Image (cartoon, rainbow, N blue to C red; front, side, top):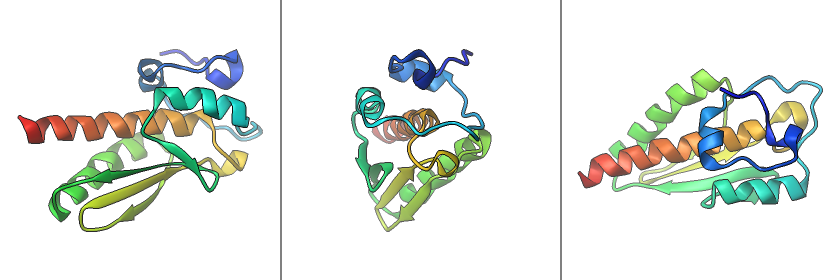
Amino acid sequence: MTSTHSSESGNPLSRDQLLAQVSRALEGSKAMTPEQIQAQLQAVPHWVVQGGALQRTFGFKNYFETIAFVNAIAWMIHAEDHHPELKVTYNRCEVRWDTHSVRGISLNDFICAAKTDALYEQGSARQAG
């Protein structure tokens, strides 16, 4: 795995590059600039910036599927040691990523957004299959 982050190289990472990354401690680092955020959003096209965080709402057929998704991302959240704000309802889960230590959005948020998408896609593939 590479340790180069887009904020260090100046270039946005692809979705595959984000998936290969691991969140890291960012104390003393700065939040991404609005220009860096806009460039990096291309790798996670279903996410928007709202209220200073990356946000996406995931839809499900019922509460069981919603909670199954929450449980799946809980494993990833624990492994990444990066924790989103979740809003869970009967058939939706809103996920909001931001990084308190930099007071804004960091590459960790994009890494976790890409991994959240991948888990959602895996669940959707199982439902279709």
